[in-house]
Amino acid sequence: MKIQTDGRKIRGEKRRTEIIEATLRVIERDGVAGVTHRTVALEAGVPTTSTTYHFSSLDDLLVATLISCARDMATEVYWMIDRARSRGSRGAEEVAGLLAEALGPRRGRTMAEYELYLLAARKPELRPAARRWLDVLTSMVRHDDEVAFRVFLAGIDGLLIQGLIDDEPPSAEELRPVVDYLLKPA
Image 1 (cartoon, helix red, strand yellow):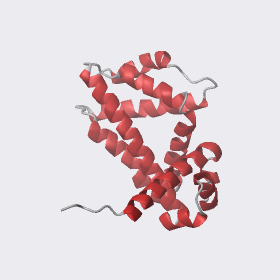
Image 2: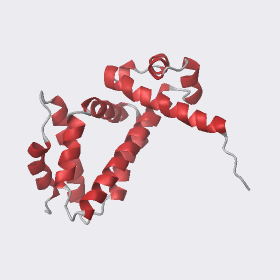
Image 3: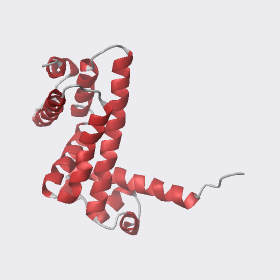
Image 4: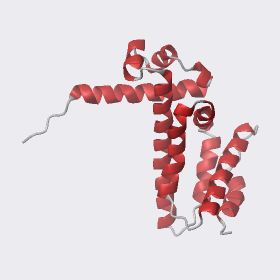
């Protein structure tokens, strides 16, 4: 028996993804304050009715964008951890490289992600989506010491925030000793 694929559902999911990606581009360019159904529709090249069909409120759109960012980052971190483990590495080099990438070529996206993340402090309805990132990381990384792991995550957040306000992004080589220190057992 052949299973039929519903083309409308596939097109709808594709459109929804396009809208989420456009939302992230608007946030990169204009900040969260620039997100409206109209600006996102224009960025996505779709009618405004399409954005309101898939996301009835801006909060729904922002939550979906935040969840998408968390999922993408979790996937990237998962494969980074997998590569590090396969080489017998503790991961300092890989984490430093990921941070340098986030603060260099992907700086705009990193700023957009942090802006969404910080918006959750003002909008309680975004908090579960923001916390999802920490939940995903915690579930992916084996750690024996909860406090040391939280210190590591806080250190990474600090490095990213500091890197975003630097005039020149730090290199992986500059970040490596700090990451290595964060990974040292207490």
